[in-house]
Figure 1: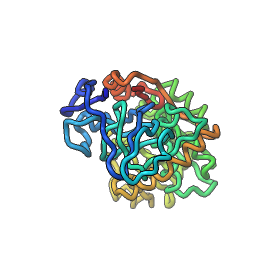
Figure 2 (figure 1 turned 120 degrees about the vertical axis):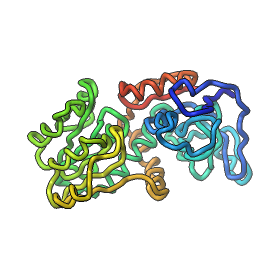
Figure 3 (figure 1 turned 60 degrees about the vertical axis):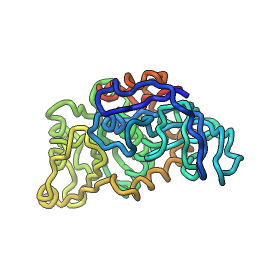
Figure 4 (figure 1 turned 45 degrees about the vertical axis):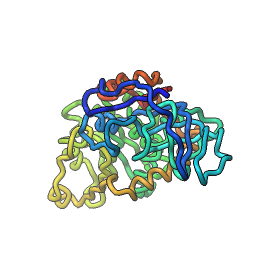
Length: 321
């Protein structure tokens, strides 16, 4: 089969198309013919060496996919054959391939009315947004800020925030097209986070912000604190696009704010993965809009990574084997 193999970390060109043996499902596993492969920001960080790879190199790259079960291993119901599922392979076989094995008990059914491209676009990022909103515990009266609303998670936060208890939704986006998209997705006001003074404008126009979904990190994370509601404001940190957030314990103490780290332990990922079925159903019913930037051939994996690193993608970049 054809697959994208990574022999070493580095620039996008380390992702090479090769012929490799088709994997065989072991006990408790299934073999899936991939129909759509999701490309994510965290994958670019692993490829470059910024984040550690969970599997030794060389290996087939990739973590997200949707496709059809074609074979089952020992102990797995043969009734799964022919059905479509979404996959998140955190430690197993890479998904940038024509076929991939996955644990049968980790599969999530894709509704018949949802195509594979939309399924892979919404499954993980939409589930992460839903888990973040549940962690925030919104009261129905609060103002929230969803950063990078032109991207996958930020866009789903913007869509889901009001149905899940936000009274007002503010957002950031890095160019005019993405800011217009954020408004279409439900943002009441949108700020340009590439403008060095955006946090000052946020304080002037946004009013007190009760919950910040923080993915930019860097210096702006510290400046956002002054726009938050003293005493009850909370920042949910789940991304580091601009590096580690410039937030100290004293910054939080002086303002009476809470910083919640959303990631790390396996328990967090388990909560995210458990939310996939719900967001897939929302997308199938038309209640959640899948964010798809472009669909490229599997051989163009390096180009997909370049688009994400250039931050030109509006939504998910999807590879099709």
